[in-house]
Length: 475
Image (cartoon, rainbow, N blue to C red; front, top):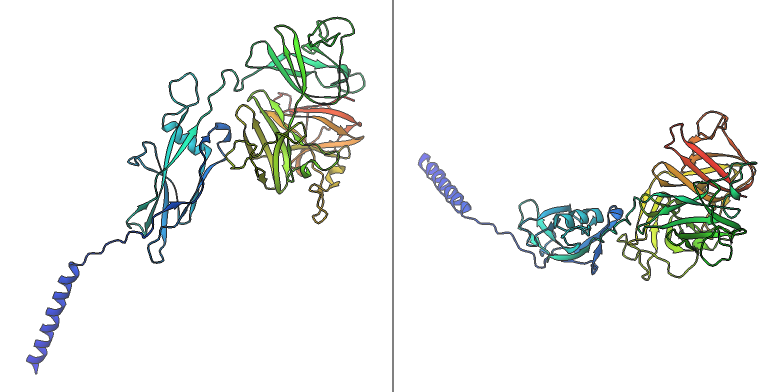
């Protein structure tokens, strides 16, 4: 009986050893997908890359899943190659979904690594190709599969020599009843003359200014003596008697050629319009949100409160030639269906007319609130023209940071009353002027009294005495 049991155990052991030997010979082969990864988004003919639009979307890569014939959890990596053969592949991003976004800033970095630049003084090209593909794999060691290589043509607009900013405030300015009541401060502080700025062309200076109905002249250094007008209105400045230049109310670009004293005055303003700002311009008395000129960057800017909706850029508060962004690449276009979707918040919007690039960046916005403007923020306004949506509080009179630390607004109508300056249409950390020394403070009882009129308003946080402000009454 003992021998039978022993033989049975021996047979079982032999079978077990044999099974182990066979198991060592098993080879598992990863299954290649039945269908590989295929891009599903449409690509542009070329991508214009500018540093000013670095935070904007460059491209959103989307693709269809690889098909392995059975349900699988697949990891995807978007890869970039400078050489184009992916021997130098770098991973742009990883996901278990079907899309990855790449910013213009990231594409600029790839372009620079590929030897492209926008400097016209170098031999490096400003146009080239970036290479992308999607890698997919199961688990951590699964056999990878790849999409076809997608080539993107990118363009880095060359810098305009002398035209990319670094301009200066010229010595000339605009004075008159059409701007600052001839700088008469006998009854109330008046604005300084509207400044001109240098340009890329020697001798050509330009001013972007809001004028009132009245007369203007041009003078240097905010002082009389040697001032110029146009007695016969022939477009050539002179020092003749009775040479005031009549103007009508509106926004203008005034250009002076100091080489021959010729000048032009033309309607000019860029603004924001849409359901996200002013009911597409259909609300009586509500203009587009004006963009102000920043000479330090040669761009136009607006600090604004936006609402959930859409916006576009247009010139002179009129339709025709308006611009949006159909493919959301940070470059304005006149394509169909190019409204720009926005969410509610406070933003700095910057427009560069040299290449039509733009940015919309969330930021703090300074504005005026009070009995002298919007009933301390309690007045209501139907911003979208829709009776089914509730009215919103009237936004404060927004100022725009036109240079670092310098905030500005013009053509602001105030009422008899008091005002304060606050951030993002909300209380907390607001500014006033307790001792009325034109330096903002956060003391108690610091409301600023104002009288009804049309104003140019500026605040300079760079002033060593503190945030120096001026409410310049024009009318």
